[in-house]
Length: 388
Image (tube, rainbow, N blue to C red):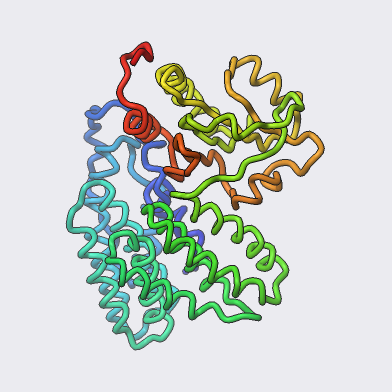
């Protein structure tokens, strides 16, 4: 039978299930009309486990007949029991190929993860039980796969751990990063843990994690990893901003020196963005709305453009009538090599933070509803027109 690289399994569990882009494929109608011909129960044909795996892959590649939330949920309810039965059969077979066991294991985990996102409250326990079963396999490859998956799950849920448990996990992950030859998977585990700590607002431990990793990467024999270490120094600097002053200097898009001191006494949104960044543009209406509501109470915005073209930037600012200052170094590095972006380890945009009236950073994330919530907390409520 065919064997597929692990990275391709995601396509068979159709990317919107395994990779998390569920809503893209779901139609708006929550109750579509059901075609009787499309409600035929899923089943695997009789045959060897390898033949059934081939059939399962074909079912997954085809996916549900409809891309509605209801149809996807129904599909998962039908396919998951079939996947469990086949996984048990392959795991219990001495003759099953290791590659086949790996495939069914990855598929089962992906489908259980998808079921959890569709409201199956038992999915998490099923994942734990399945990984526990895999970890007892007498095949080293399968047992290692289970251990790796258990580690990944702990990393992804590090924000739910107690502080001491978080530190213990980080120390364990860092211990696996051993220069000069650094294992890529070990490196990725630490960076993922640091990002998850950042998302959980545990900036102190995130900063310590990035700093420890940067020191190890600086001794790596891979020049690309050494380059990552340089940017992590900036990331550590950004993670340690809350409660501290932020340094900000440069030139505005019209070529004038930027006067950061003049913003003292205001609440300021620092917005790293670019005209070529779709999510940045999508966030602009929210920023403009809050600017109009809170500007009279002392709110301002400073944009830091990662654009490559001054012309594109100035035209965009004029077209959108953006009323706040934008920093742009016409003669300096562009994009993510921008001096300010490098100094603060910005590797993705939009990236935002809030500076309080005293010049100290209040928050390292201020997008969507969170921006309005922070401004109301720092400046007090306003009416819809922005009046106090």
